[in-house]
Length: 152
Image: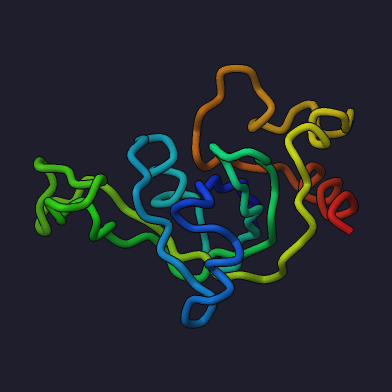
């Protein structure tokens, strides 16, 4: 089992939005970074733990726990010319972008970015690394355990 921190802008999909969706599940669409895409395509498995992180907002931080519920499949937004995630080079025969599905497990208190930075046990957490802008990053089992305790 692996663990992941996955960023979503709450204006696009918040954890509260996720809780209202059928099966409390969403396709993790719109990822347009090859490294993050490759995490989804090559490394993620059904059941992997997910820290649902709100980014690009007034109070960034972990808003809930989720799990990978479906393996990577082509991201349909790449084929929609009206989508901000449209990719004219992608075709159904040769998709460039993929996404997993994520299902809510539990809403938590908001564990803010400031709180994450204050925890010495999390100094290796990639979201805290200067210059890191990836929307999906791996989380070590030790970081996961520390975060579970902080979210209580």
